[in-house]
Image 1 (cartoon, helix red, strand yellow):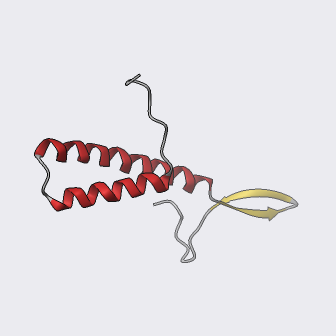
Image 2: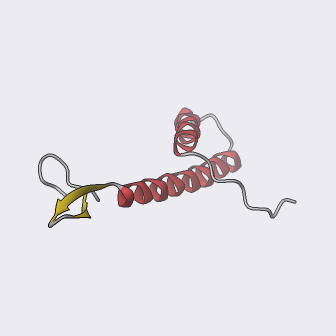
Image 3: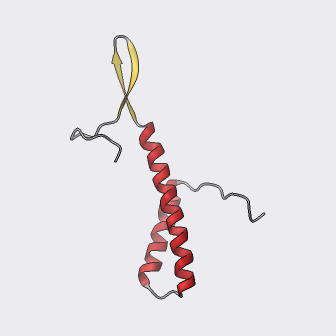
Length: 85
């Protein structure tokens, strides 16, 4: 079944594969067609990593106790900037 969607890779695995692709492309010894295939795969991996980072970022919350209730607040970096970029 060639049309079956591939199982999503873990962030770490996708990042390792993306790094390998970048090194291959930087080497510059590939035929054009192979370079294009690797570029397309790299863009897919990059999008997957961005999506996973965005999902993780939205899940990072600091719990604050307020008036006897626990409520979620957006994550903030130490310098006061918001966690999402």
